[in-house]
Image 1 (cartoon, helix red, strand yellow):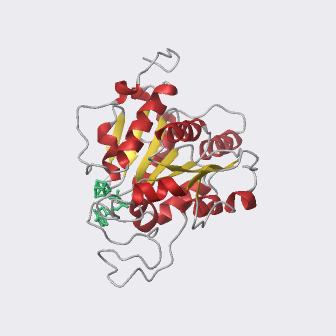
Image 2 (image 1 turned 135 degrees about the horizontal axis):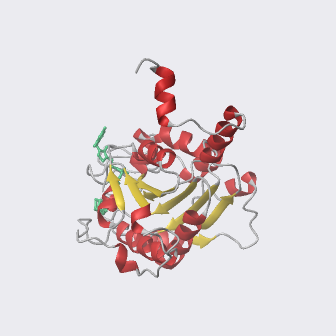
Image 3 (image 1 turned 45 degrees about the vertical axis):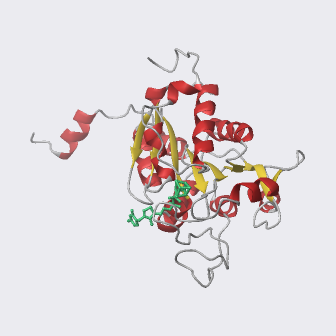
Length: 291
Ligand SMILES: Cc1ncc(C[n+]2csc(CCOP(=O)(O)OP(=O)(O)O)c2C)c(N)n1
Ligand code: SF4
């Protein structure tokens, strides 16, 4: 089957036999449901799609999606995604994971994947905590919050992932709430249709370590970004970051820039000076002429 033979898909076509082991009420269920719907809307071809994660509750997601997938090492979803995309640019590459995975141990990789404008979508399930390891503070945990690792309150300032993404060069940045599946599907489809590094921060409650009220709290704070917002302006986008009383959802930033693969293609063309690319055999012979 090739991508030219576009066939209708249903959300259920992307489901595997594996049952999610998330706690009852975990926000990640909404993310998985929305991903199935978005993939079906876009008619993504399962054998031409790869879902890559690190380690965490949220990083279990590739196991539940009937495409190629890779549940890698903590914090290393983006290096793996980079390798896959550079080696096989024709594949649709989706990286997923938690805020700990993406911004603590994997923080450095985030900056570089974004500034290179790697043509992938990155979906973070942001629960403001380390869920899998039982409730330690993450880089997104609000200052002052009591967690398993911050008994007297979190002493550290937190980051806003969307502010970071805009600053380090992502070319599509959005924020979503996993409790609103309808708008999450639209935002995921926008990210998956973007050519370049598309980052969607999905506020996805951890009911076990952040409390059962997280859903209702975030639902009350979620407000759509106004229709007149200028998505092409960095300074306008940053107005919807570091919020406290509201949680703006929608597309903050969207610009067109050459992707890493396009830049590499331009270098290849220039270096060949109009000549055809050498074959693997010719490259081998140029290094080892006696063989
Ligand atoms: C190299 C390494 N360091 C630490 C861990 C332990 N560890 C596993 S998951 C995790 C954090 C999980 O939090 P997050 O990425 O936010 O995902 P969540 O479980 O909240 O979805 C940590 C610290 C690990 N598996 N590997
Ligand atoms: S611990 Fe939290 S993040 Fe992990 S499955 Fe349970 S509710 Fe979800």
